[in-house]
Length: 129
Image (cartoon, rainbow, N blue to C red; front, top):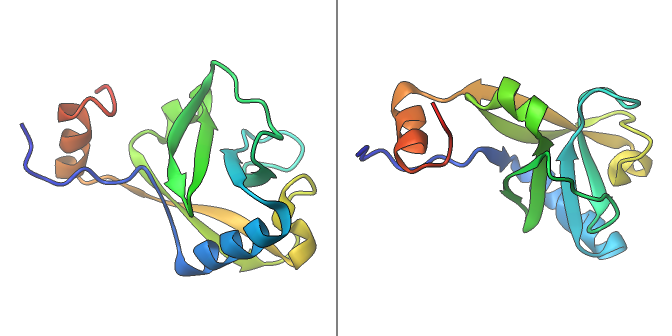
């Protein structure tokens, strides 16, 4: 059994957490879904909670800013060895995502898990090797 702490599979920058709080004040509880490339490209999309129907093929990757973050199973297979880091940058994002009218957009950055972190995820049955 690994002694490395279990790393979160998705995290958010301080700027992202601040924007989430701002959006929650306007729209209530939120949810995120990592888009698979249709319409708005591959981007983290922010919705009012319950606005997007989560399907059997969606994976709950984690929680950012008290908001669930989902990814499709097919996208998850591509990204499962990485930690997603949700950031916010200037510019217009996806037209379906709530932050679009704010003049900013969410952006997914990533980093590979270290061997020790990956082993911790496997040992704790978070992912399958």
